[in-house]
Length: 314
Image (cartoon, rainbow, N blue to C red; front, side):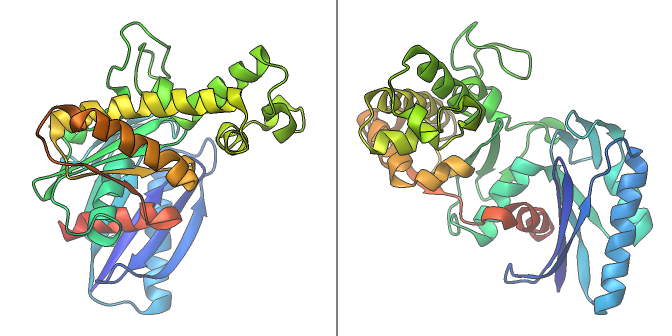
């Protein structure tokens, strides 16, 4: 059996054909054309899938799974709103099904990602999992009681927009105090730049060749490893914010594991060990509750394709 996974990103659409073992046996990429009419984009995906099936003479295709950013109604099959793609009221599943004559399922990309990690990645054999993707924002995914949890209309699990500080920092969603405004890679970069501007002697300036525009999510971590005090403070603050959010999710969902994804996770033990220590010190949210494992997402650049394909395994 073959499962087709479609990973819709901000600039490209990655499609993979996945076997029952979770291996991508072939793939292709379509560039998103800025300003292209939204229905035309979906039809183009379908036509490319049909062509790929024909070229490889694929048989026994179960269907198409789609991971898409934005407010996704997994029940109706619509992308109700995706600000980065500028899609709205788009019948993704209906259009694609009409073009390809296959079953089509869709979910928010972060929801698909946690499902991919449970089916094919780091969280195999776990029944209760929370996933956070730490990138431009903070994405969230929930796998509870052996199934993907999406909430009403599939629009739940927006963990990045849980409240960390009342009336705090302005978030990209327009509210203040969201976890995303403190624990995203964007927030880390902004905090690093702020610390550098306030401390002109920090070694972080040397790390970026005195060009503040070169600051990225690695700047504070890599400089902190070399002993820079200011960088250490930036890293400690970031980890404290992220850990506070995780502790809340431990209390609400009582997961067996929390999976972290995104480029920041390349720091491995420099990120994970302090979080584990904080969680342990705080009794994983409350006394006499089970230990929560902190895991680093395993699927990497294939997470979107495999997560989308995993929708068809449900």
